[in-house]
Image 1 (tube, rainbow, N blue to C red):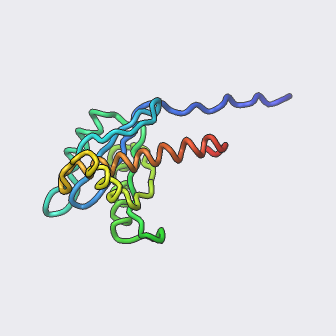
Image 2 (cartoon, rainbow, N blue to C red; image 1 turned 60 degrees about the vertical axis):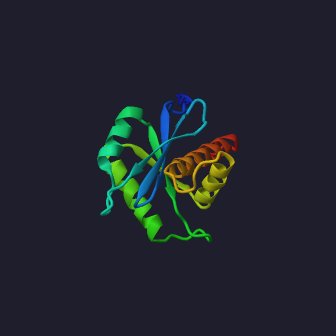
Length: 156
């Protein structure tokens, strides 16, 4: 008796959210798995005393209903972890625990610098919350591009 081969796995279609997490703000970007183009959405302000604005995140997740969330990891220049990295990981684990959404990680080194450069090109004031959303866009687009490259190379 021969085994029937499994059908090829099909990628899930839907919305992805990219998050640029910090203790003060969470930049948010969105993309469709069909178009694979990330766009900045908004910036969530966290409470000034610390913590995460879970009410705003709940509303955001209810509105977008993502199939996955990509959280930026603020690694050091040499790729090591720091306190901000550990905070981002805790945030991602809590996000998964609260909402059951799949969380993926993306190296976010230099995204703030890239967002500031992009802001200069589009005359975005340097200290606006828009830069956090643009940083989230860069994080999400980087993840989309890296997964497309891995798929093209036969890695899933």
